[in-house]
Length: 512
Image (tube, rainbow, N blue to C red):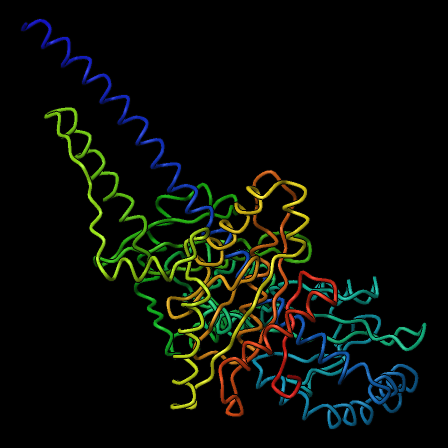
């Protein structure tokens, strides 16, 4: 009996150790997948914010710079050397109102250049001109050489920035180029507003020391990792002055942990996410390398947010070990009972049985409540209606079970991408509705584009990519009933699908 007991104990211990190994592997895989998703999210966030500014820069160029008046002035500047100063003054006078407007939108520079990449007019320093940018501003040289628009982050000799450089062409005649540049502070502001996280740009110290004029290196300052990176002083001051919850002390402690544990990733400019803790709080820090137009990494975009998932993951792991220990040591058996309370029943009745999110009945109720609040406090809200493109074809090609899986995966992806204050429900079939409280139409369009990009980039099992179309509308004081806001979103969705699908379409009130 004793021998059998020992044998059973040994076998139990062996089984227990196998369980522990399996649980450990599963838990580590889950954490790795979660951290990979954080990096993927940071890349998507960066592209969404940058693409928004790129579309705005394209609009500024097309509507206000690539005009007959500006092209005529650049023609005169190229042909009549004796009148360059007068032409420069006329161009400065003509576009100063535009420059004031775009700086209010957080753009940093408006800069015109000749075809040989000599500076013609810097709106931030109109007195400085005539200097060659060859060997100094590669994006300008490339735009003038290829006569193609160049979009890239560039360190510069004075200020770094996300640069949009456009060739100026009048027919076949090349008149030069113009740069509209964006500082990181503008991008950070949009990122923080859209995704409610803190962001920093860490610029390679060696690049700054090699590229930036020595007298201009005072524009940068050292931080927690002084041997590797520097910060843009102006950007950092604006960030610390803003009421966005940024704390440089916390950032410094987190970065110190990262440098200690992830030196290899930093040495090779790899993207990664790192769970860290400070002062009793848990954080996830994600690093995304930023490349210049030569595809050389010269900076890191870093996001850091309070995130209890890694700590919960650890607690879950410990709990699992304790539970297994109790099972194997004492033969504990237990049964879980679900006590159906009234609250539980109400939740079940308001839940879509397939996707697990709220159903249309609950959605209508929540939109109605938000609509009443918006009328009472004159607060904006927006509705985003989305529809899976060619969903019937998915069902016909892969079967209804595959279609159901697409609906579930889509609901999970969107549900993880919205704010806590937002409301997400299945409206019917392959249609979903997202309500965005306290959100105006421009911000809801950026949010909708974020969702569209996430879905397009996501992997759905056993099929090619899945895309969605989205219609967006915003409540106004003219909307006496919430149905009118939803109707506009539905009409906008119809326009998005009619115009080719896989796009976001806004519908202002006057188009209802």
